[in-house]
Length: 502
Ligand SMILES: Nc1ncnc2c1ncn2[C@@H]1O[C@H](COP(=O)(O)OP(=O)(O)OP(=O)(O)O)[C@@H](O)[C@H]1O
Ligand SMILES: [Mg+2]
View 1: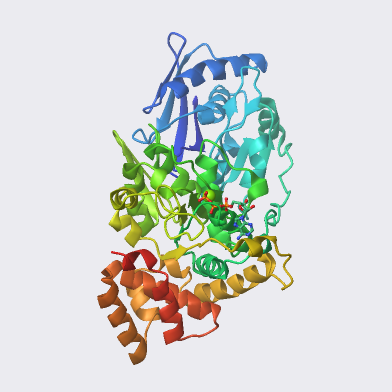
View 2: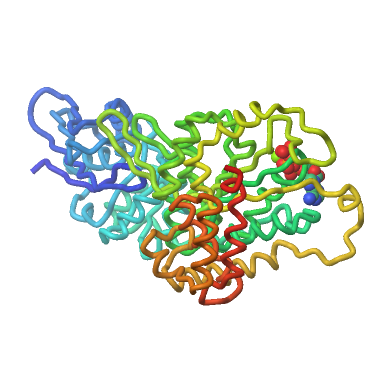
């Protein structure tokens, strides 16, 4: 029988659905056809496979070769099927044994020389292969990424011949056993560099502890960008599940995933000229955008009103759901996008509104238009709004006599507070749904009265109501309290600064 079956995997969002690669040799005029909705790249795979086989001194069968990639309705892209196709041709023509093939999954692009080229999205493939109970054969470059998945047998290869020898002579490729790197410590700027601004630092700590979104408003040069860039240094460590999911998104992205960044929360800072597609994701076989690349980490939008309003509006849905669905023609892909939004802006176009060091030159009309670039519904979705005022000059110059707390000390408190959240519901407070908020953010009578009054006075929306409760929950967690107290709640209400102006 001249039929061979091998397992490989396609890419769909951050998932890697199984693809059966069936190779059949029949009598007839020599030809090679690939069926199963392949893209152009898969068609090109024919030429690469032929070249690789001939250059590796195998015989390219002069028969009618049919290759079926099943299921047919699954989108397939890239050269990742070269390797299983080449091995399938060899097995079907009896040049390598086919008995052991079903124990493995194969993925890799071939060069004409027979050498293996790396492919994107190895991590999702590794997760799926492990769950299917099969070993994985990958190009050498992808081994470190696959090794992030525990309990998977990985066989890295540089050349088609390595794999053929392995299959023919039994276990020639040693199993990859290098453990994943331990999570890299975040180096870089320290929170102690920032003078003064205790209010902003406190807000940053709360945001870090609960994963809350934060908007900083203040005149130029008061330290907003400086504060935001110090957030990664105080974020809590990732859980294994979070780290895997984040790595899986990066793995299928254009930039790829570097195993050295394993378990480090992403910090993305797209420029305000970024397009909607860059921010949200897209493409014919959809790729993740900035919001997904920031999954379980931070997306910092500096100079928020400079962003295109329509681009900002697309953030509304993922800010609530933590995921994004991208539809392109016949295809749909879903990516996780639970990112922490940190934004900064000036209070007005000239930047000096409310600044006692200079007079603001903007008309009321101009200020209104500037603020209008950020819609009410988007503002509503930002948990905390704070002012970052100008410091008296002497505070900047004066050598700090007082001991200023550094990032490490803050991070310790953040870790403890996050751990309480994980123990309670298994997620950060910012990710609670409204039912969970009702359950875990209960108030006493005094708290209820306070919140009720604040809602009326500040004309807050139901969404703002829930967000205040979540922030209050985080403040209580930082305080080590199981109940939300009035002090926690009133601090949380204080972080709705922009609501108050409307
Ligand atoms: N609180 C502060 N402590 C120490 N240095 C500060 C502080 N605020 C501002 N600076 C100094 O001013 C510089 C500018 O700060 P930063 O870029 O964070 O301002 P910004 O608030 O983002 O301003 P803009 O609105 O113009 O973007 C910093 O690089 C730092 O040298
Ligand atoms: Mg700035």
